[in-house]
Length: 69
Image 1: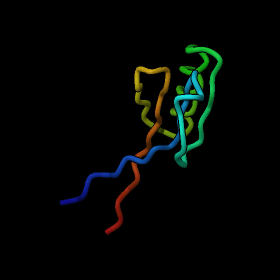
Image 2: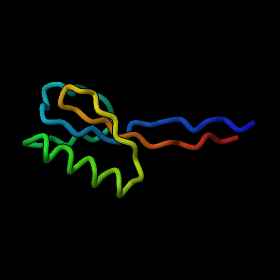
Image 3: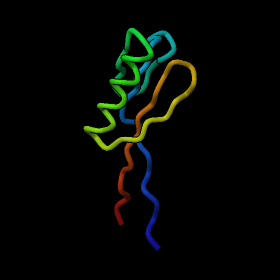
């Protein structure tokens, strides 16, 4: 039986840079919720990432990393 892929944080898109601290994912700071949503949409289309809304002005994009046997 194959193992499920592991989600990896790919990027963070936020309207409030003060809520994001540390980490290794790039952070994109948007001036409005509309810009935040547009940036996340294009990043997800380009990279085939999944967008997760944290409901605090921040969106997290993840990609699935294949596990190696």
